Image (tube, rainbow, N blue to C red; front, side, top):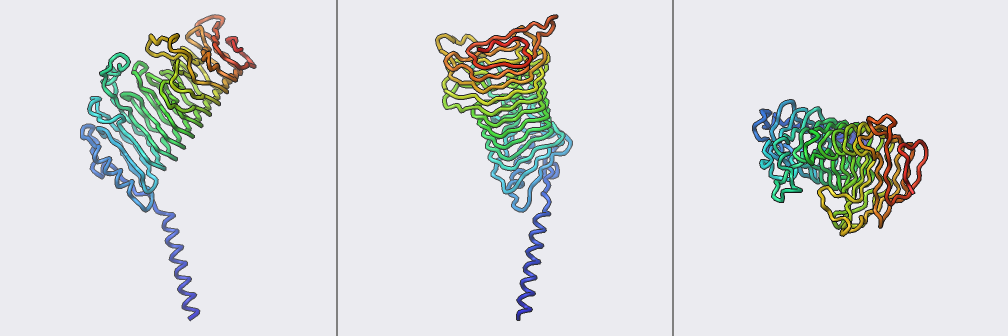
Length: 404
């Protein structure tokens, strides 16, 4: 009897080992969209096929799922991919996803939208073609209250522990990538392209996000290369080429009630080439919310013929008149700002504009080794403008600083 008992236990142990080993080697199930009904003819709307494939991949219990978009042009009229999913999903795009040229054919705010997902990976050599050219003339909401709502290319909301790598976003109707309440997300090797005169085609826009990494990315648009909005914290940007565009912008901030602090930003090894702005922080005068912008580091930044290389604007007013004097000063507090090894050329004489709030002056602004010359001027003559700034400078300083 003892021998039988021992043999039974040994058999159970072996079966357990086999089950564990088999689980560890389970390969992801591949869903090739073309083999599951999607047509790469650039005409057939594949939205239903894509959402059906996503549903099956998302519900799969044993092992991860891989959705594969092969070479070819897959027209999509607008899709939403919604979790929560049972297992990680890898979305590989080697073909082209083509948006409708007519903006009214997209019946949602974002053309391709991911929501409530953990452990999502998007990669590939493919392209998201927003076909924005037909939409850009309608992007006039600051003058036309009846302007149509234009869709952003790809959005992420409540997506965590995820990443996007290598793909190209081309000619968005509005912004290219939009992030809201996204945490622990890596963006690397991405290319974002739209003409410099395409309105509101921000490259990457994020609000209420944390622990985001953006690296080895090329962005050229008609608006901000990267826009950092309310509630964004622990953002690390490195090895990014920006141009054309409006630079890397924090804000605008303070316009709406219940906005949150923006803090802990690091920008390193970035090149701004021909942009209207480089390092930019913009807050509304007479802001509706009292928030803090703090712990920002900009280091090893090259400016090539940039309109406003360093620009803190706490009297932001994109469409004047704004009646500044009647509205009052900004209530956004900027503090603990470090600018180190910023160099290159400025299109304009004012290379460093630090225009802070009178009620909430900028505090602890640190300037180290600044060397920005006015392009085309023999002596490189450029100037600084300071309002309500407290801080200190050291190292090489051109133009001469004007800190208190």
